[in-house]
Amino acid sequence: MSLIQKRAYARVGLLGNPSDGYNGKVIAVILRNFWAQVSLAEWDQLEIVSSRNDDSRFSSIRDLTQDVKLHGYYGGIRLVKAAIKGFVDYCDKRNIWLHDRNFMIRYETTIPRQVGLAGSSAIVVATLRALIEFYGIEIAPRVLPSLVLSIEREELGIPAGLQDRVAQIYEGAVFMNFAVFETVDDFPCGTYEPIDPALLPPLYVAFSAQTSEPTEVFHNNLRFRFERGEPEVVQAMVAFADLAEQGKAALLARDWGAVSRLMNANFDLRRSICRIPKEQIEMVETARKTGSSAKFAGSGGAIVGTYANEETFAELQRELEKIGSLCVRVKVV
Image: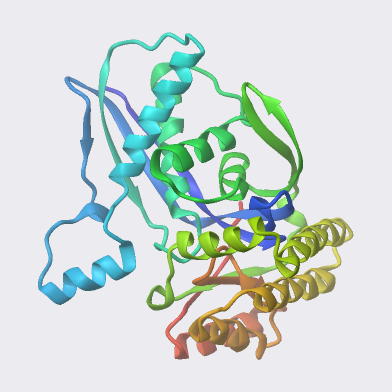
């Protein structure tokens, strides 16, 4: 019995987010520090095995309450189920033959929950990668992010954009343009340009599980304001996209100082249109006091930025630890 194991990594948005869900442009990188892994093996029946992330045993009623606050009411099994159904639907619509062998599948994840590091999409991506290998089929890399997004939106009602899924499929660093879409294999796809990770400045990511917030909370509010044409929000999305364009040029020129300034500007623009919890503002301001740049890595709860040298990184860790945040170097390759 051969075992298939596939991973998908956490994602951090460097510039342009949250315009990815609003026909904008973004730069994102994967974070190899944290991942979701799916294990699949042929089995006598189809079985989804619970992981430790779906624990139903608690030491007390307070322990259960805290778990719900941090992880919500649903674990990753719903994501695995949705990925399997979406995979079968994709194949059926295209008359792709699937053999009738059953399998056992299990996921595990080290990605912190609800801090904007794309933990949910990582589970779906890893599941699809395992299924693709088990059934011996091919799906174009450009199509896969759109398939993942359609599964999360249509099966689970998760509001999001393509950024996370593109980064997790292409890995490394990617510039994404969602201003114009092209239909590929019946899916709308943006334009994706890999960026050499060697061009990236030293990056850190920091997060606190105590200040997490579900992605849905942020996106639902912003989507409503954007769709009703609120000028401030519409104009901000254009500005976010421009920051990503400037960031790509700065990276190609290895102008890390410009990248740092643009990342700060990205957060400042976001702060001008959104009400941000004071605890999350404190993380950004604490990081900036060390001379580092800081912005949200996703929809809130985690921050990402550049730092100058090892002394600055050590100071970052010390100062962020004082407010209950963990700080790590970003590993892209």
